[in-house]
Image 1 (cartoon, one colour):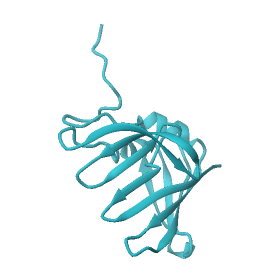
Image 2 (spheres, rainbow, N blue to C red):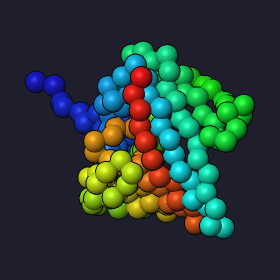
Image 3 (cartoon, rainbow, N blue to C red):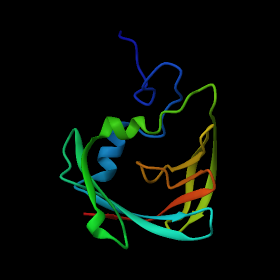
Amino acid sequence: MGRMTDPRIIGPGLLPTPFTAEEIRDATGKGKTIRIRIDLPDGTHQFRINRFRETDAEGATLERWPEASPEEMTANRVTWAELQGHAAFDAETTSVSTGILSLALGDVNCLRYDTEGGTFWFSLAHPGMPVRYESAGTRTTVVSVDHA
């Protein structure tokens, strides 16, 4: 019998990621649009849009733009494995806990990763990017997720 490996552990010294690449792919489906609120240290806020299109087994095209300036859209190809890798944190400098956040998405059960660079909350019901991220006085929060 072969040795079982955990698909959430993507490298030595790293904590398990909240989702596998396959879970992120499956949650994205044929595409999705994520609206994000960014609260800045000066008390102002702005909204950004992330949109996944042209999905396939390996990845998708990720389009991103400030909601007020769609002409500033950038687009690039991302793989599900790359997206999973964004949530791979150092085991020695990161603590993990669970909790519930009340967001525009509703009350969501989260895994919370406290790192040297910030705090990330991943909703167990929304595989993909963190539903909240705080670093250097800036708070980024997912406001909505719409599927294609």
